[in-house]
Image (spheres, rainbow, N blue to C red):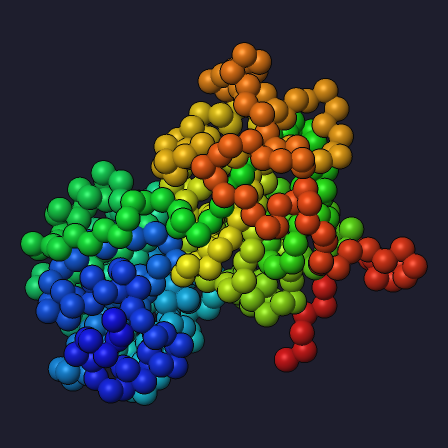
Length: 441
């Protein structure tokens, strides 16, 4: 089935072609018709399945079919990166329509955003905090909003935005179309949906788990050997970009610095950076200035960078949902990817949660020829409180894999060859600490 099936304006179709889309994804196929019909909708789909186009294309169609003035569509996003990504996607989809979109988020000056609003905006993509600031200053009028979208609604709740969302709802017309989209839908979000959605249609594509195009593997290791094991894995991996997740901002900075010192083209992405620096890091990663991005969970939602071959969890995520969003940066839209996680014995409870979501046991791997010292990566802890030799499962040792529901990957770090730039001992000037020079503009 093609996008021709939908009753969309020719100008919207031109935007679809500009985006390079040929066939709608399942979430688009099931969501676009009811949204065009004016229904409220609760959309649940895996990360990277095309949720943005699922709500933005029918919004553009609505604005073209019934011209009006003022802010008529409001999209709320939990992070600046996701807000900017939705805004940029809207510009692509609506390139031929004349529909104007403005992105509003903190970390940058208010004046350019206020000026853009004064020039006229049909669609506003916003983070809740900055939106409430501008509303309090009477810089934006939300009284004409016809469509409200909450994207990554579960993350909104996780980040404590629920009170802000309720304040924003009071600024909107009661009669409107409301759409929820997310990769996961915990009970508290369903409760919010019940209070603000009117007779919603629920569209769920599969379960709230990573796409099947992603393979998964654990690399058990002691805390003192994590950095050495990561370096060994990077040296043996195949090509493609790698996104590494850490639990803290400090660790993201220090790990990126350490990788830069040994010659990798790397940048950090964490919440203490200014918005301009964060955007420069993402653009550099997308534009091949950097091969590796070391990030906190600020990057796990909404960052759509093509060609991420590996997501590496240097630190175990706190929840199975966080794992889903982290690893969803690879294997997007049916491309294959690999999720590799460095695990410690105390991580076993969350590993079990992740395995329940995946519906399979995650393959345990031992990196060939790596010196683990006295640590035995082939034994599996019992409840996270110690090793249980009688129930230990054999991990891959480079000579073959134990039976597992997880697929082996062609880029298995124990057998693949390095393809990213590393230190050149014959040219010390190339080995200085820091990051690669950004491209000239």
